[in-house]
Image (cartoon, rainbow, N blue to C red; front, side):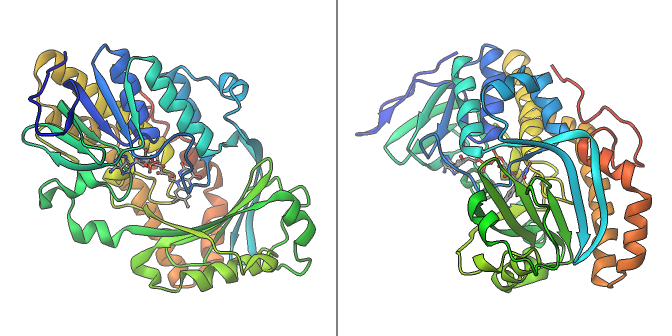
Amino acid sequence: MRIPIATGGRMKDQPGYDVVVVGGGPAGSTAACLLGEAGHSVALLERQVYPRDKICGGCLSQKTIRFLDRALSLPVDLLQREGLLDFTGRGYALYIRDHRILAGDLDEPIYFTRREHYDAYLARKAGETGAELHTGAEVVAIDHARGIVTTSDGGRYSARVIVGADGVHSRVRRTLPEGIAERERWQGNLGWTLELVIPRKEVEALADERGVIRLDADLATPHLVFAVCRWGYGWVFPNKEAIVIGLGGLLSKNGSGFRDRFKAFLKLVGLSAFTDRKPAGCSLPLGNYIPTPAHARTVLVGDAAGFTGPLLGEGIFYAHRTAELAAHAIDRHLTTGAPVAGTYSTLLDRRLIPELRAETAFRNILYHGLDARMHAPLAAFVQAMKDPVIDAVQGARSFQGFQRDDELHSAVW
Ligand SMILES: Cc1cc2nc3c(=O)[nH]c(=O)nc-3n(C[C@H](O)[C@H](O)[C@H](O)COP(=O)(O)OP(=O)(O)OC[C@H]3O[C@@H](n4cnc5c(N)ncnc54)[C@H](O)[C@@H]3O)c2cc1C
């Protein structure tokens, strides 16, 4: 239902919407898509113009692949046909510094996407469900009590429900009452990342034969390297035309030395020729999820609420999944009047938070062990736990006791 709002001065007033979604990354587009499909009027407000890039490794685990198929009717062969899967592989290599602790082939492949294509495609898909897409103007103010969202070009959008899907620095979150995001917990588990995308041809020509970790000749194997920063890891991910090299860890544990650690990581993997290149930097939630990310008519999803896997910072799946849970709560609210904040929080409590808590506990064991330089016992532990841990990362098992558990994947509609 559309609710016209009063015109104010020279502002461009938009018709009222059931839902205004702020931010058009995977979380925002998923919410817009599902709510549009359910017949609600939706405005999706994205400050950039597609195709826009987002610093990201672009790794899609089986968790995400399964979600895309089930909830958005995007099976893997369609993703392939649409050109959204840039690279696919089963190989992997895992290191603690220069010591290779695991390597081999996964049962199920992992995929890599390019975010400029992925995000543009999902936003377009949301548009096809009837959601109105407004790009190129930033949301600058939110009046939560009246449900009015104002953009930098003077647009005013009234909404019965507001979805904050505007990423890790979320303006929507920062305009909610202080207690929603406990500041100390948020800061204590906030990560920092640096990432460099190097054309594959350059890597092939300049890879340093003396790199302590020798990347595979085809540059087709994702590498994860622990103990190159504290409470985080380095990665080398293959793309079709490029190699993505990154380093990410908790800010509170690493201080300001990230750039030097990144250079050291490049040297470790034989890419010292690229230490003069300036990597892109970006914050990343790493365990600072907000357990109750909702207040009155406003809900937060994805990075805006700190939802990523605390072990590896995998966030695309959690962006999609929290948006799905929020969309369900919003649909219930719009159709039955059930309180949106309460329904969303209950769904999170039941379907997501226990898993994130268990993953955090696993992460803490791993990183405390690395801090204590217990590399050999940790290597033995990871080798012994290889299959369940890989299954948990891929979403075939839960981190809670490494049992098979479909709570992460079950439909809510
Ligand atoms: C270096 C790095 C590597 C990563 N690698 C991976 C990986 O390999 N796999 C994985 O699963 N996850 C990865 N992640 C995490 C993943 O990128 C995020 O978790 C994911 O993008 C979250 O999606 P989102 O939709 O919540 O937020 P975003 O993708 O950040 O989208 C938010 C959107 O909101 C818009 N926006 C922000 N403010 C406003 C405003 N005021 N008004 C209007 N629009 C606004 C932004 O322009 C943006 O489009 C990585 C993150 C980093 C930093």
